[in-house]
Length: 157
Image (cartoon, helix red, strand yellow):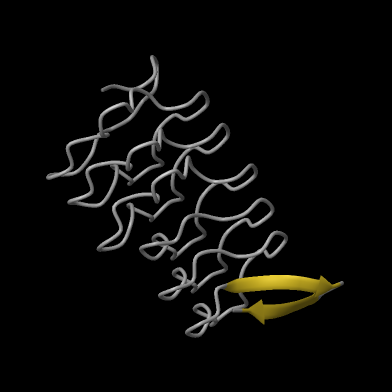
């Protein structure tokens, strides 16, 4: 395994061995992690099979985000990264809950204070940019939001 030539990746913390078999580089334009971010959280060995890194234009995690929270080992199998225009998580957001497969196109992340989705919630609908302040996710049985009209968003189960 390795990284693309010229990429400045500072490494992974103790206990992290790198990327799994078949992951040989980071995509073009990805320079590594921002200041203070050394890789993935301790115990995270990389991305699961089929995940090669971040897509073009995504440079890593924002300042203060060191990786994924406990129990989250990366992105779900088959998820190659974030959709176009999504550069990472906002301040205070450390990752997505286990089993969350990613964001749909047009969803840019979570607002301040939102740390991810609750158990059983796998995604937001296209065009939903996040949750308002102090909202930490969806209640049990709600799997996302759907847009039903201009400015109207309703839960879907």
